[in-house]
Each structure stands twice: as C-alpha cells, then as structure tokens.
Image (cartoon, rainbow, N blue to C red; front, side, top):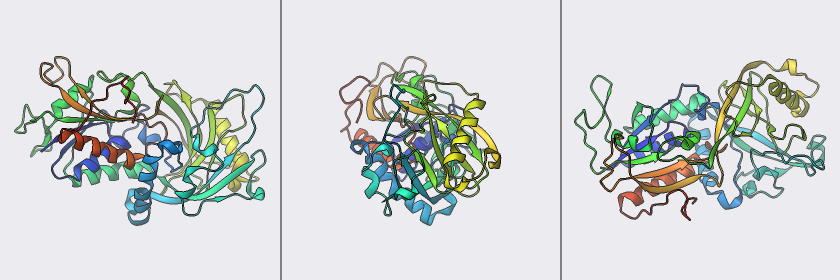
Length: 399
C-alpha cells in the first residue's frame, strides 16, 4: 500500500488528498501548519473569493477546463459544499493612457475579446453597447459559480475523512521531514501515531505531495525562487451584489496593482470586493486608503449600486491574503529527492519522491480538480516506476 503524505491543507492539498484517497490502495495523510478554520496571511485559501473566472491562457487551460464540470456538479447536487451559481460580467477597456504603467492583472484571459472559455460556459454572450458602463469598451456575461471557503474547505476535510485520510498539524523546516509522517494512523485516544512510535510502518518510502503554496519559496529542499506572494487586499460586505464583476483594468493609472471585482459567496458568506495584486508584498496590515478606493470603484461601476454611495456598503471585515504567484506558472512535476540528516530520511539511500503542486496564483480553486488529477497521474507513475525526475532548473520543470 503506497503511503502518501500531502503537505498543505489549502484547496490544492485537500483536493489532491481527496482524489488520491479514492484509490483504496493508497494510505493518505495531510500534514500542515494551518488547517481549515485558521486565518493567517500565509494560509491563502480562506481569503479567496472564490469565484470561477478563467485566468490561464488557452495553452494552459487544461486545469480549469477539467475543474469546471466538478464544481458545476457540486453546485447542482451538493449544497453543503457551499458553491452556488452566479452571473458573471467581464468588462474590458481598449486603451491605456500614454506613458501609464502597465497594470498588474489578476487574469490575462479576461482581456481577450474572443476567449477560450466562451465554449466552457453554456450561456456565454457578448454584452450589448447599452450594457457596457461608461469608460469600458466591451464585455461579456455568463453563468459561473462562487465558492464559500468557510463551508467548502471543511467540506473537503469531511470528504477526505470519509476516505480514511489522516490529518496532523506540523511545522516543517524541510520537505524531507514530511516523509517521516508516512503511514500516520489515528490511535484509540484520537491522537496520531507516527510510524516510529506506533505500529505503522512506511515501507517503501512515502511519496510526498508538496502543496505548500507561497511558502514553497521558503521550505527547505524546495526554495523555489520563482515563487513570491501576490498580495490581495479585499473588503467583505454584507450586501448581496450580483452579478459578479471583473475588469481587465481599472483605468486608475496611479495604482496599477489594483483591480475591480466582486464575488458573492454562497449561504451568507458575504460579498468580497477587491482588490489588489501586489507582487512581492508580504505586508499583513490592510491599507485604509486602498480600502477607500476599492469601495468607491465598486459603487461607481456595479449596476446594483447605481445612485448609491460607499456608506450603503455594510462592511464585515477587511482582509489580506497572499496568492502563491509563480513566474512561469504552476509547478506540477515529480522529483526524486534526498533529505539532510535529522529530517527523518536516510541520505545514504535512494531518497524519496516528491510530487509538486504549487504556484497557482489566483486560480487555485477553479483549477483544483484538474491539478489534483495530474497529481494522481504523477503518483501512479511513481508507484509503477514510470516517473521521471524533474528538479528545478531542468528543461521539464514546468509541465
């Protein structure tokens, strides 16, 4: 029975664990610093909107194409997952002020007039001229979905537990430390037993699935310099704002790292108004001036707020989270590794396998199932001896 240790309990780690656990030959454990219910700036998933708005170019659209059918099924048939359908409007500007800095876009796909996802959504249509707000040149509308992370992440944990997945909190200094949690079991008193202290054994060496998100740039043995935070400041309000909006540029050349979007979460989760996309910024404290601009833009643009003011928005909280941006895109590969002494691995042996699944930037939810399917494929390749090691810097380091 393959022992698999998933590092990270965000949407990428939980979805990977769920799909891996559906193979009854696998024994799966999730080891993470943070678990659903926690709020920490470095724990990205609870801060997400989280809507389904394709972000990847057509050449990288596999992950989102494969995920949408499952999210659509959950929204239709599994209300406890906390996903509901929502109309989405994308607004585009055609010109940019001469000499203005290029905007930092959350999604380049939304700027395309003829996007690949027009065939993904059944009711995709181009907006008529009367439907496009002043200052914008064109737009589109389609039925998408919005996920309430406060419901969805615990639901994923429950689904994993049904399949026998074991959960353990731990702070890892090096990716090799994860291997020591292979074969983790739940004892009669509810504690977890590691192989060296319990009855479980971990032979052959465990397969580690690295879903550490933005912390992949700091985790020993990974230290991916291509990963950096894309800081997102948002405001959550009680107002139910529909449709969901997203723009390619705000037109505010003084703040090119700010955008405009809203996402209404299911089942009373509030509406998220955003936001910023600030590369390399780790700051946890919200900026009040940014909050003022975000709310003012929404009041000026959203059709439901015509004639209203910022005072009409009932603020619940201001949030700051760090999207796991990676230059070059998501890393979805297998790598053969060895660990230093003291990490629970023998650096004199042949090492252990790591399957990396990180660097999703702002599309972790809407690409979660597609990426997890690839994780399953890579783990199966490791188990059957067909895997090829692709360390950082190799010609195949990006799938």
